[in-house]
Image (cartoon, rainbow, N blue to C red; front, side, top):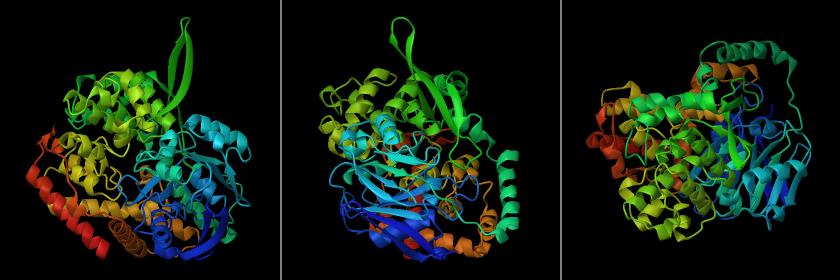
Length: 581
């Protein structure tokens, strides 16, 4: 085994590619760690996110292709949303396709002269000009690229952007194999700035495996596979999926409704996971090398003729998307929610940011902060039609209002007013009004994501207002997730992959780690990521939490502003310490 990472470096400007061997494996492990290390190596930390020299980095982990649920790819980039180093993760077939092209990571820099597609296999690199894809949506782009690159179907992974990415919307995403995404913080706009419409990963090779490793590997694999398939560790993700969280969070008065003006609604049954399963669920599917099948696909029918004539589409749903374009927009019909999910997917926007941005725009219009001449459509909570038009206006930056909103809700609020009710915690909020710890975690968290530490669970399990306990929870959870994301495992597999099992899995492949070494390396990666984020502009002590969050009342009562402020200051200090360690 080579102790260095094998990295493919593609320069779109020069139309050249090279293979480089990067650092020692035990310094960065892979995934999140490797992406951060490569970004520090290749990027100019003072340059603009859209500068052609800034890289996009795709990185997989040492367990990818060897163990189940190690099915994610980490994408490292400089976010156009806030200008800082950022990560986004996606599944589908991307991780295995990269593994079977033979690389640990792919670095893409430069800017293609014309709109192009990059195709990578184990034997070739092709930069193919695709001006005919300009303005095409996610679905048409996928269909065309499958025809242009018909080889290796089933092993191939296709990444692509829609019009939102081409138009540099700050929360444009990259679609992966139709149902998965590199969402949040605008990686799609970075591809757009590089004139890169798609990336095709062939996955056309194989991996060498030494026979002497077989016995220990087989034993470890069986142990982990049994936890995943024969226990209840991940069962809930297959059955109703994360959509099962809608009713419990609504009962806790922790589900944001109508731009977080309420946290509970009697019509929750209409958009619950149970209703989606009974009325719309068509099938479950899975990322490559994952036995769980957590991706829930709904069947959307759209009548187009008078004699019961229908178009039908398959649309993925989950808890977060249902919150964003369902409860947050006051929509209480399950097919309306699925319709908006399909609309957002088509143009290539991040669904959480889109739903929260439109919720703010709706309240801003109601309050007279903005006018109908700016929103162009009469946005109203619970009304489907105007939101369908607004999504297109957002992706195409139809006027100055939508151009500003496409840069982020707070950017729009700073220009037009309404900062108090902009539901932004570093970026547009995820669907948890569980309390102070979650609000602080997302506002200051590395990815500004509910996945940074899972602090919504701390709010639900802990009644005391113990600052040191909350800080320790967030830091320890983040550290463990740094390790798992460096493998790069799905976070749904946490119970199958405690540190001990990660250690056993690595050593069964010929590595030599102790549990203590892995934990220490995870701590160093955690610090390196924070250092990178701060060097690219993040100041945790300047983070503000909008007034709307202080008005929240859930099952615990009203938010405590003093506790929230003290927690925020304490977490900011810990982040600064980490970045300097």
